[in-house]
Length: 149
Image (cartoon, rainbow, N blue to C red):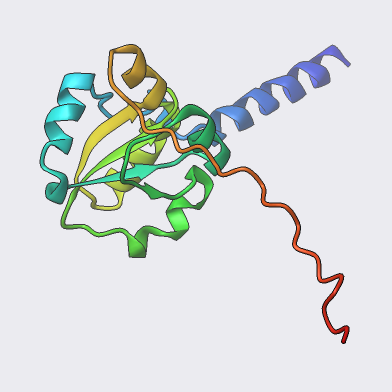
C-alpha cells in the first residue's frame, strides 16, 4: 500500500512539473522604468503609447497619466490587432506587476516595449498623477406635469 501511495505521489509531482511554463519560470522580464526614464520617454508623446492594464475603478481611485489606452490585462491578448506597432509602448499598472506581464505579452507579439511603470511607485518617487473626480449625480428629472393641459 505504501508503494502505491508513493508511486501516486511521485506521478502527481511529475505531472505538476510538466505543467510549468519554462518561459515564465523566471517571472516577468519587462524593465521596470524609473520616474526619470518614464518622464524622458513621455517628453516625446508622439513616439510613445501608454497602455494602462488596470480596471477603470483603479484608475479613478489611484490616478493615472493624462493620456493612455486602457485595455485590462485579461483582454490584452484579444486586442493586439488594434494596438499600433509604430510607437514605443509603456505599460502601466499600480505597482508594475500586471504591467510587466502585459509588457512581456506585447514584446512576444512583436511590439516595441520600453518597459512598465507603476502609478503608485511613480507618485512615491515625486511624480504627479492625474485624478479625475467624477461629477456628482444629477437630480432625477421628473415629468410630473408632462402631458397635462
